[in-house]
Length: 464
Image (tube, rainbow, N blue to C red):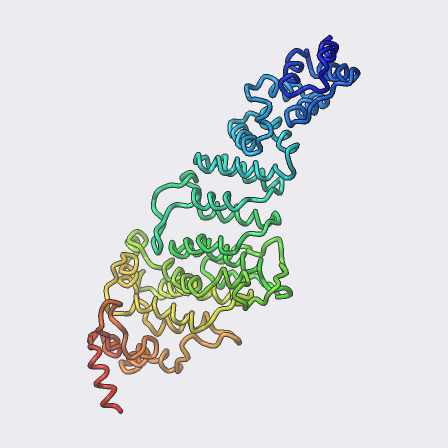
């Protein structure tokens, strides 16, 4: 009857508004399809639009719930042509667990273009990040990984910004809790998400790992640092390089299994090239930070030192264990070198000297952790250097300091002065702001002497 009336007016096709009226008057999807067939019999077509196509698809699929959703919606039919609007609606429906609406909208988005599912899921992920809903973020990320959908740069940036505690450059993260609930390690959670993304087959810019590595270093969390850096080095290891697991005895706490699922990743450039992922991940700044992290992780605190008696602090077994802990950063760099990371001995030596100066130099640090480390340190410089040399030793590594063996074996005053000079140099600047320098030989005696720059110049001229 409707088709006959439309034919009487000479209509050749039905527009979106008229089609919605026909759909609203239909009892169900089958009745709607019969109405369309009747229109076709009298040579009346349906104008092309996303709304009209969606109605017909839902009717043919007998999805009455999807059909009713767009028929009863207060949106104008032309709104279904707006891709960006539909993406936002889809994200909103997903976030509020409105499955019928989200499924219908996703079908419409699929009609409007290809591969829009990944974009819409990224919108959902960003929506949860902005609303600080960690469990929703985690569930959405897992769903995207299961569907093997790519994470957009905006999503990755937002994950970084919202899931990690804020921190200023060179400082530890603040106590402000991010969207990750208390009791959950934000660094570990972020690392797991990034690793899962890489395992799913998506390429991740290597530089995205730098902030996570730096946070592990600055917090002195060596176990997490070891697991992550060894995993990354093995992932990007040069093709054909032999991968061996480190011995658990090499570290006090040992390494967990770090070999990734994907090995021998083909890289177009040499591992020594600046653009290679290994060089981007482990630049000079990062390598120095790794050495510092080892020392930082072993630095005592009032809590763990107050429980030790004087005899326990002086015990040989405690002293040796502490030494081994301080060398963990150096040992980690050695392992990374074995996996193809370009590590330079002079760079490691520079970082070690900086840390040793905090322990054996005459100045008092402004950092509480450094003051405690120096206060409770009962290891001689010779013992420390001997152990560091032992850790770094290897056929292709050489030695850190290239010292005569007698300097580490003798405990005479002259040998001690010679060792201090060999490690720290003849003079060492008091601070960046001061022009004065310490005479290192006098530092070894416990009576440090400060000399000015012109004193050094005069001495040099006299020697000439």
